[in-house]
Length: 407
Ligand SMILES: Nc1ncnc2c1ncn2[C@@H]1O[C@H](COP(=O)(O)OP(=O)(O)OP(=O)(O)O)[C@@H](O)[C@H]1O
Ligand code: SF4
Ligand SMILES: [Mg+2]
Image (cartoon, rainbow, N blue to C red; front, top):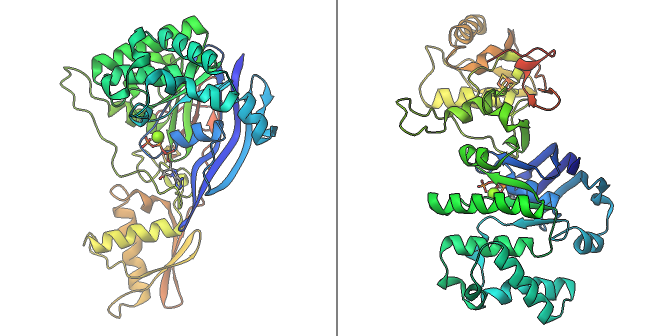
């Protein structure tokens, strides 16, 4: 049975440049007693997903909708007051990214762990301190830590303190946002072992957020691969790790260094897309080594690529000329140096064909025709990749029609 279900969750930020689509139509479930790891590159929206689940909305929220079900109940229907009183911390709690470095340096640890109980839940001081003490003990900290100041503790101990804070109200689900990324490997292992023990003893479920696939495999029952605000592959770890379906997951796994292996890790070319002007259909296609025409290039992206080629001098014998974007799928190129449009059209068509392996976007060209003293280039209509599979889902056009075609 699922403790948490997300359906079509959206969470966008308003900025001067436009809306940042940090969480874009995300759906997944976390089974009771399971750990779902969410893995992805920096900036892909992992923390924003956690913020959306816990309704931690900044002032510049542009869009926040979808369904968040906790134990079968849609908590999006609750008022802010009800949500604060019944869901945040009691139902779902969170260990925030970098929280161990945000402990108040002037307050003793016991007081800091107890304080939220007094402030948010009107607990008496004595009761709050007793609960704090119990929670600190449960994460394996010795008694003296309660009276210590944060600077007197090691990184591993401080991380245990913030885990104790998240556990104080005995939630069913804990979101752990990069809980070990600032720790050395041995301390990391200790914290992972602690999380495993707590999961068993307290019957907890976790969402474990990390950029580290290897670490995620230590703890995760299920793993969700996030890219540019979307979950691109999700399923049981025992399937996703040995048999990834999505080209991004495959590339991500190949980028992990293997101890004492003669094979070097392979990095993924390019950078993740801008979440304001995300690529047209599949957001991974500018970096995907197996993309094809249907994966979707917009005329604007295509024009940007030509501009980059022009600026870098990689014109392959063709003067790309100024590109004017006409609509989503059409751009018009103007010949330079008085070249006649018919000759220019022929040169362009040949260049697109010859260079389609080095510049994948050229595969998307469907028509090149003379128009209004220039040459109009029409692109293949992008097809939105959709998820296949039930327990193990992946979104890629290569996996269409129920068949799995390895890329
Ligand atoms: N308050 C905000 N206003 C505008 N944009 C934001 C805000 N918070 C985050 N973003 C943007 O949303 C995107 C997702 O950010 P988020 O912090 O969720 O990523 P992340 O996957 O947690 O990254 P990291 O691994 O570095 O922690 C980023 O492009 C980020 O710049
Ligand atoms: S749909 Fe699949 S093949 Fe196409 S670009 Fe995206 S990940 Fe690559
Ligand atoms: Mg983050």
